[in-house]
Length: 106
Length: 123
Image (cartoon, rainbow over all chains, first blue to last red; front, side, top):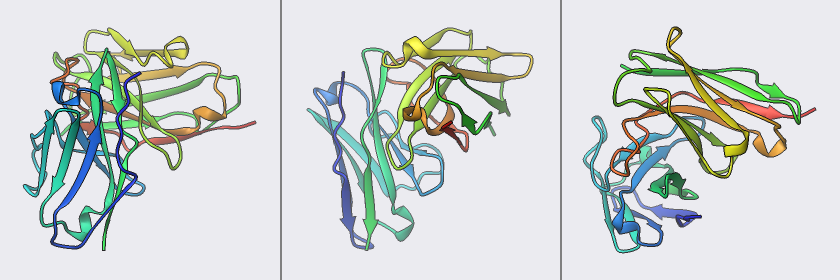
């Protein structure tokens, strides 16, 4: 089965840039999506097709994908960005999610 | 605005089937280009895709759960349903329904989600 690996946690100071990685074999050859999930809430799509933002998602959220690693970047991180983030890919007719990264803004 | 709402029993006994329904409003489940997925999340853990159904009723299942899953739609009620057979405690999770605009790698992303429903498997 295809695995996506994320760091369990990332910390960032307010106003700084947060980078969350997602690693998988040849991940750069397919598309990566990113979801934000706050406690007790449903996931929200923040990036699709590697680097596209859905309507309503702030410009400070961006994505990239190359080689074996996709990266979600949050520029000028705000306290409201504290959440769990999940990457997702599609491989061999199966949807795969990463294990999730808890972003702490402190 | 598309809205999805999951419903069903919150408590299921081991070995019994789990049945959930996703009611869709603001759009039709038979609209071309819409696919309807089920995703679950055990308490404190990550997300797992269960399976999806296309606007025409075709189904696509997670190979690891395929033998126990049935997903089907009711166009008259605009609902998509999930049935998971022979549940165990490992099936305890928040179950979400979500829409995705396609099947190909470029389009398999979940852009609308329900609020989720916690199903506990216990005797």
